[in-house]
Length: 196
Image (tube, rainbow, N blue to C red; front, side, top):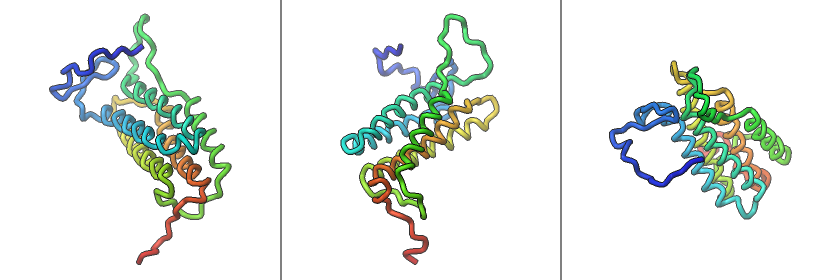
C-alpha cells in the first residue's frame, strides 16, 4: 500500500531521484524520461475522458482501466529487472502482463468492427473527444519511443509485455478516436496535395 503523508522531501533538490530499487539516478536519465512520458500519457487520457464521459461511457470505462494500467507500467519501469533476487519478505515487482496487452487488443478489435475501413490517413480532429484522444495517442507514441530507446541501452532492461502494451495503447487510442467520431463518420481525412 502507498502512503503519502508528506509531498515534498527535498531529496531531489540536487537533480537526483530514486528508482523503486532504491538506486539514485539523474532526473534526466532515460528511465526517468520514459516513465515520465508514460505519466504525461496518463494525464492526456484524463483530459480525453472529460470529453468522452457523457456520450461514450463504454470508452470512458476503457480509458479508466488504461489509466490504472499506466500506473502499473510506471511501476514496472521504475523497477528494472537486472537479475537481482527479491528478498523473501519483499513484494515481487509489479510487471505489465500479457493479459493487459490482450485486453487492449480485444477492445481495439471490438471498436474497429464498428468502423468502415480507412481509405486515407485521418487528420487529428473531428470532435473534441476525438481530438483529445489524438493528443493522448501522440504523447503515447513519444512514451513508446522513450521506452524503446531505454531498452536499447546496455543494463537497462524493459519487459516485453511493457513494450507491447505501450505500442498497442497508441493503436487503441487511434481506434477510440475514430469510434467516438460518430463511428468514423466524423473523421477528417487527409487529401494529399490538396493545398498545393
